[in-house]
Length: 478
Ligand code: SF4
Image 1 (cartoon, protein in one colour):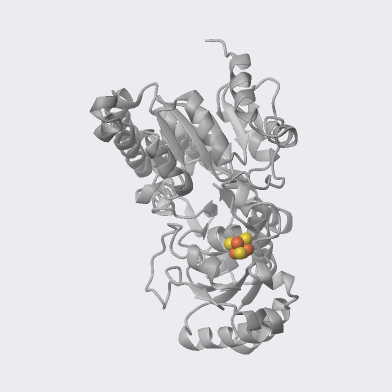
Image 2 (cartoon, helix red, strand yellow; image 1 turned 120 degrees about the vertical axis):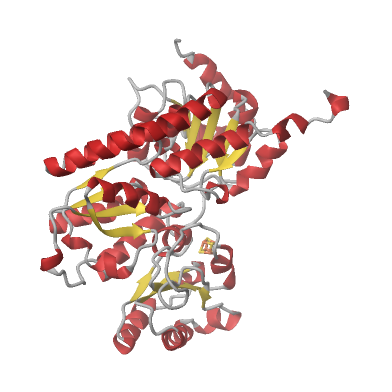
C-alpha cells in the first residue's frame, strides 16, 4: 500500500500547532517521516539542547556515565560524588544484573555517595572525597577500583578530583578514576557515555597482562550489553554455542579486570552502538581490533547477526553457527505460531534511549506487529541513518520527543501498544493503552537472544491481550 506522506505530515503539523512560533520551528526539525529513498541522516535533527519547559524524557551525563556505562561494572565501587539525590534516585533502578558475592565481588547493589552539604560547596569537597576513598578501601578491600562519578556541583565549584584520584590511587594501590560526568555537560545521557568511555580508555584499557598461553583465534569481547534482566547471559549462550570465546563483556555483569585485557581479543562485537562506539573505535585505532555491530532482538535479526559474526571466522565457526540457527529454528517457530496470531497487525509506538528504537523493530515484525512511530531520547545523526533502514516508509521518527507530543501522537495514531519508559507508563495505561517498559523490560526479560525472544513475545501478548483493557470504561459510559 502506498504511503500517504501528506497524512503523516498533517498529523505532525497538528501536534506542533500548540507551540509558539519559535518552539514550533525548533521541534519541527526533530520530527520526520521516514522515507528510505530521500532520507539518510536528515529524518530528524538530533543531539542538541532540549527546549526548556516541554518535559523532555532525557536524563543527564551522570546518568549516562554512572547509570549506564560504569554502574554495571561489578568489581568496582562507583562513588556518586555530590549531593544525595542523583545517587539515590539511580540506586537499583536500572536492572543491570551481576553475579557475585555482594560487597566482596559485586558492588552493583549499593549506593556510595559523598552526600554533599552546604559546607562542602563553600569549602570544596576534595578532602571529603579523599576521606571517603580511604574509608571505602578499608571497608571493602576486595574492590578492584574506585570510580568518582561527578554530579553537577563538582565542576561548578572548582574541585580538583583528578589530583585526589591520582594521590589516592597511589596510596591505596588500585585504580581511582575521576569521571567528569556532571549533569550540566552536554545535552543528555549521551555525553556521559562518551566521557565514561574516555575515562576507561585513559585509565583501564591496556593495563592488564595478557596470558598468551590462553589466547585463541576465537577470542572476542562483547561491547554495549548491560545485562538488563539477564540479556548478557542469554547472548553469551549463543556465542558459546557458536564456538566463540568471550573474554570480556562490557559492561553488564562485567569487571574492570576483563576490561584491562580486552585489547587482547580478535574482534569486538558491539550491541549498543550509541554508548560504546567510542571505545570500539579506540580499540580499532590503537590495537587494530575490528568491530562490528550486531542485533540480538528477535530470530530474524539474531540469524542475520550470527551469520555476520561467523563470517569473520573460519569454517569451524561458520558450521557451528549454522547448527545453532538450525537448532533454535523449531523453538522460534513454535513461539511465532503461538503468539503471532494473537499479535498480528498490532501497531506499536516506541520511545526509548539510543539503541532500542531501531534495534527492537525486527522482533516486533517477527510477531507480525508494525512499528508506526519510533523516537529516541538522545540519538545522534548516525543512529538516524541506521534507523531509516530499519523502519518502513511513512513511520514517524522523532528525536527528544516530549511527553506532550508522545501523548498527542498516540491520540492520533491509536496504537495497540506503547513501548517506552517508567515516566510514560502510567500515563498511557490511564489512557487505556497497553504499555510495556522498554528500558527495564517491566521487571521481566531477558529479551536478547533466542531465550529472550520467547519472553518478549509472551510479555507483548500479556500486555496487549490482557482482559483489563476491556474494563477501562465503566459500563454506563460504553
Ligand atoms: S543533572 Fe546534575 S543534579 Fe541532576 S541527576 Fe544529573 S548530575 Fe545529578
